Image 1 (tube, rainbow, N blue to C red):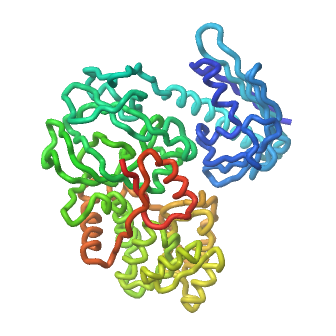
Image 2: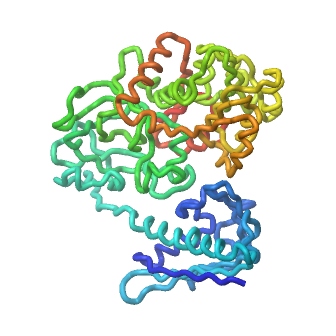
Image 3: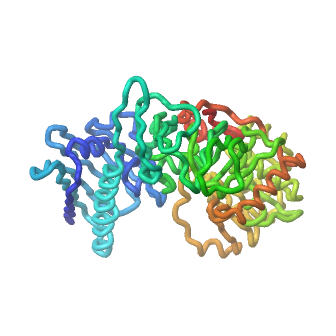
Length: 514
């Protein structure tokens, strides 16, 4: 039997720490190792006997059962039911005590378990550092970032002559007071409505708030949004899988609108210019925002705000996926998953225009009809047919030259099987979860290559971004790529948009209207 004990001091009241830890299903919102968690059978999160089923960032899945919980003693204990690691008999407990000298909390986390002798040191280190110490630091950072709620008044929002540099981008000030409107007044802090993520979690963490909107800095413009794109990268930011968003902050990387004010050092733009963007930093889920203009895209009269907000990020992505990550050639066989989705529809149309044979997969007959209208050569409903076998049958055993896979866990293995000799798997998303661990030695049987492109690495400078924007807008103007009208949601209903997107029941693009 091995016993592990770790403790720390958290500089926060015991009630604040306990309110986070007592939620037996809440570790997905704060522990960096946990990607997703749910309570089996929908039991209450504080019910003794409830079982949490969760997935780690590396793909491993575990089930743990709550054994005891005491609000009086600030204590809980739990045991491990299933795990990919040999932590036999694992039982753990968490105990909090107030620190008498100051308003802080003593936190002890301990466990005992039976490891195999040859893995004892490895597993003790994993529990000590990967679980306990990482958890201590995550809670410490979460409470350190907890926003301060400024006072509000019934008649007007709070304003102060505070320079914009005093309001860090990662911690917008929050107020429940009314929203200011009209032009920015130099030296005064206005307010704007925005969707704020105060902690990582599910769609319910997307809350409409009033946040501070300072005047633009000398190198910034202030944009009034008219349309806001919703993308799966926003889900990754909301859950904490990508670290582009550090709570409390506003999600969103794509929008269109009008420049309302400019900093003193900004050149080449004017108030009233129509612009769009598809880039970090996050902050698009807001009525107005400030940002540097480096990666702003001017909109011509033949590109509507709605089209730009619904398709710019997807169109730029399709451009570098089809031309840079893998240069699709005439006669290539291209496999495209989630082909009825926003980027999937673009890939189908564009790859066909490039002369490729397009094999598309979808999850339902309704989605199949959408992709057939886009003129994919073959459409496979993978909930009914084994798509890897179908690809091999359609290609006479040769397989696909490239597979574009944004689904992840549900399709990754099949994508590998569907590739031909020297095939290329482009994994650019994981809507169904992480792909897990794979032995790369298995790829040698076909000399397979795998890419995991990062959007920013292809778009983080004007020189990199501009060719993709020009190529995409040219595709729209020439008509070989068409954008269906996006599904519209009000900014208030951002959570509903995320639920629909994650359910994988949507087709085409989704858009928020401020």
